[in-house]
Length: 164
Image (cartoon, rainbow, N blue to C red):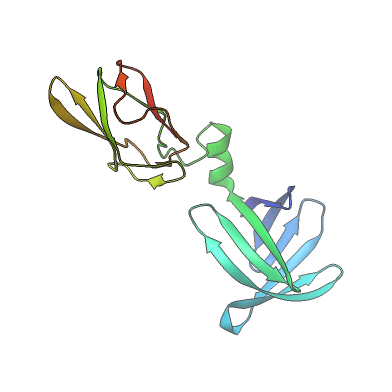
């Protein structure tokens, strides 16, 4: 299995076979799992023991503690690299784009704030148009970066309301 590892801004191409990993520079590393979630690394310059502090499957990162130092590694397999090559870095999963007013109206209530993570369907704001309240919801997951309107603002169709 081939993959790419990004560790401390250094990118390494690697191939794995069993517990042995061959790095693009020709160095070979062996990782042997130990009881309790720790592991032993057999490196060209010696043996180190470590453990996984955190494994974020969604972000494809591993936070490792080795020899008292913390390392965060981004691990991308062949599929991740191919998707990135075609501009689909997130596996084609939609991410929220800036929210624009679907119609002219008056911003009645803002229900989110900058820095807030939202899922698809999360209510973002209430827009009053033609005497009707319209709940405007997130169309995809994302993080609110900025609110470009305030309660009471009149907006035209296409006006950017919330930035992601």
